[in-house]
Amino acid sequence: MGRREDLADAAVRLVARGGARSLTHRGVDTEAGVPPGSTTYYASTRRALLALVAARITEQLAADVAGLRLPEDPDDAAVVAVATGFLDALAARSDAQAARLALLVELRDDTELRAPLTGADPVRDELVRAARSLLDGIGVVDPDATAPDLVGVVDALLLYRVGTVATVATVATVDSTAVLTAYVVGLERR
Image 1 (cartoon, helix red, strand yellow):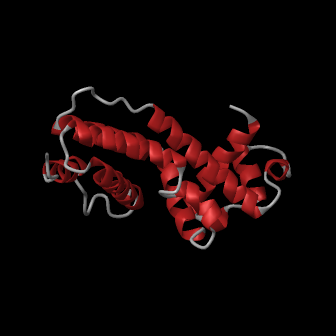
Image 2 (cartoon, rainbow, N blue to C red):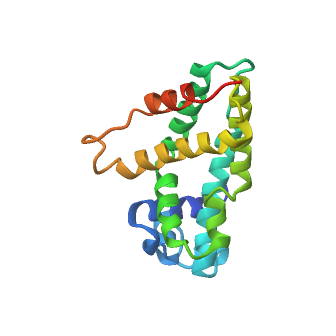
């Protein structure tokens, strides 16, 4: 991994722990253990620093999507297993997901920087295509219309999981497998 990725990872950790307002060039330098001013070479403005974080989160998502393995002849249980496995893989990158949550709020008025963190990201298109393939494989009536919904359910479960890890996870848990199973089983079939 190069210096740029190291700095981006440090920036992601900062945002995950302290929110978007904690993201400063000096803070990233300290977090990454590099000399003062190093981050400024790679991201000279705060906006460029935010873009660095968004790009890193997107790179990690792209790697997770590339790692998806779809069964050739899926059934409902296989669709749930793929969705749950993907959810678990994303949740394992808890800093990236917490940073994504913080940036979604921070960048609500900046459509360009917000796009990679939302459905406007090309990586998301790949994920929707994978969902469409799975749903078509189990005979869902309109897999094109339903695939973004399945991705949305996984995303909602992810945001709930990441957003409650340190606060209410022991008070109110969500059984992701049960939610996904209920969703998939309830889909209209051809």
